[in-house]
Length: 114
Image 1: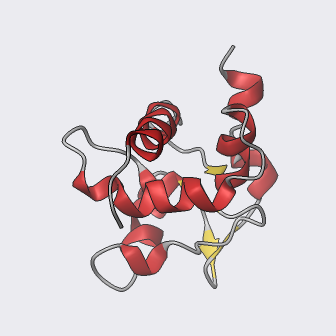
Image 2: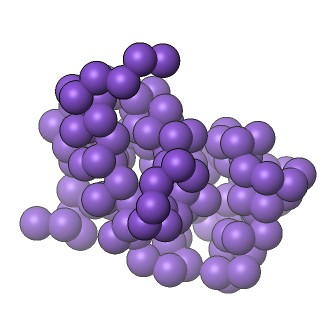
C-alpha cells in the first residue's frame, strides 16, 4: 500500500491513543475510531495496528481487539498465541480467542482521555 500523509497522520493518532491503554486493560478498534472522530474507520484502526510493529516506539497492539473482545488481530503477531500470552501476562483471561469479563477490562478512550 502506498504511503500517504493522510493515512500516516491517522495511524500516528491511533498509535498515540494505543500507547495510553493502561496495563491490564483493552479497547476496541471502534472505540479508538470514535475517539478520533472517525466512527466509521474501525477497519483503518485495524490496519494501523497491523502496521504498528514497524514503529520505533513500542505500541501495545495486543490491547486492541474487536467490539466483542475477540482477538481478531492475533494472526499478525509472531507465534501462534503471542497476542493471548501478552494479554494473559497482564491478568486478562482469554478463552477461545475471546476476552472474558470484557466490560470489566474495557478501556474507553472517549471517557478516559479528555
